[in-house]
Image: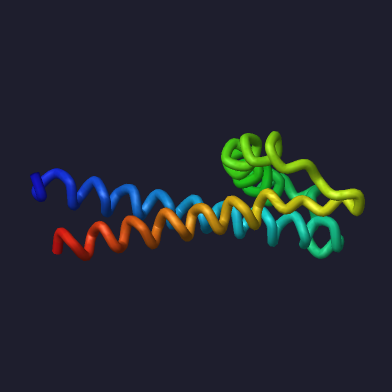
Length: 100
């Protein structure tokens, strides 16, 4: 069972790490766009930003349905998602320690 379970856990851990990178990149790119540091008129940059934003929004939509934005239009859903991703990554680490 360890032959199949450990690689699946490692794959799951890698996906969680990649999802965390996508969410952090989406937040940082959003800040840079709002501050007019990045030019959204650049076609390559626009494709990159929209791709990252689409993937991040797929993960953030269920959380945004549960947690409304505050009166100051502050969106806490990326923070909640990052905390959940880190939590599940740590749980996966603890399970892997038991198998290795």
